[in-house]
Image (cartoon, rainbow, N blue to C red; front, side, top):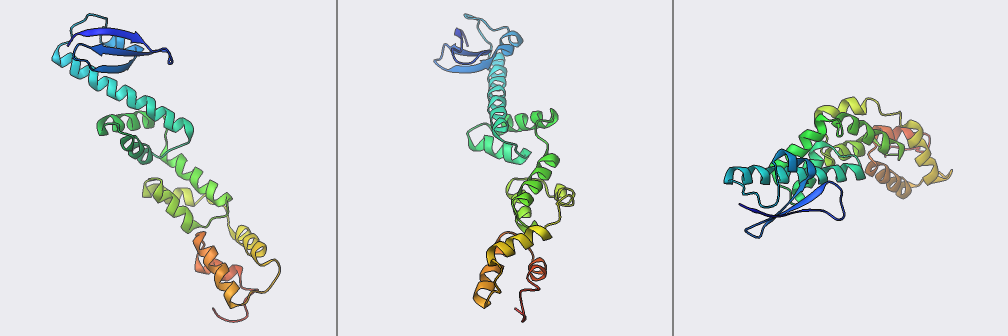
Length: 204
């Protein structure tokens, strides 16, 4: 497969485009030019072309992965799933996710702790936070360590109750509405009963 043209990108430094004689093209990084001894007019063997295509796929996937984690943190699974959903080959996506994990750019343990602290600060209970850990692909064996560092939510729960009731004693309808709201935020029945203990005069 002959290289018809090797052109630097006008928009991105260290990015090049290879135009091949069959009309196809590859996007590569500057390091691959040296790694594969590429130049205009070079004739690639089938094996060299296959290796270059795989390298280009991995390189492109790495660039996309770096962009994604630059926007916000990701779990390894979350990053892998997103790369595949955007059309990256599974092998290239796995390579990129493994590489970023090895470099410490993604770290599921640190990410789990960040999620716990973020949602606890927003006034959510442990049930909702568990759902977030699951939805974001954090491995289950990391949940308990992260949740063990969750700050006490009793003051947060009391603040939510006071802000909703505004000093009034709730009737049954208001009590159910408030209880449902707290359950949706991830608080347990025991936590809710404790928070409402001085507001309720009968069993509910």
